Length: 74
Image 1: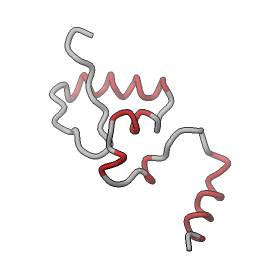
Image 2: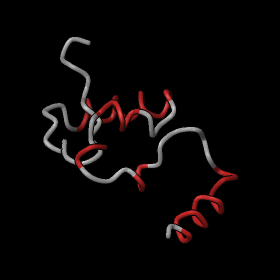
Image 3: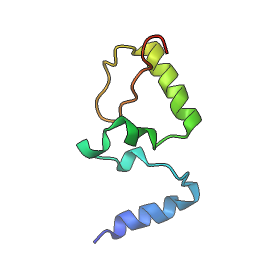
Image 4: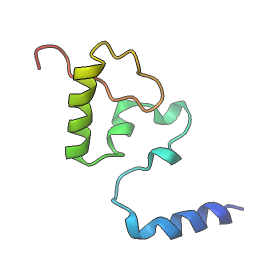
């Protein structure tokens, strides 16, 4: 039933990092910031938090795979 998905996963296996894949995180169940954090290495996520804090401190773009900005003063 999922042969196509299985082939995609098998084909991408050499590049698996051990993190989640944003492309396969669909629906409300996977929009929690903790789930999104698992899709990145710690270094990459921290850099994205820095960018979010600089460019979207009010968190206007917070839907889907959101990365919350750092709270003021942190």
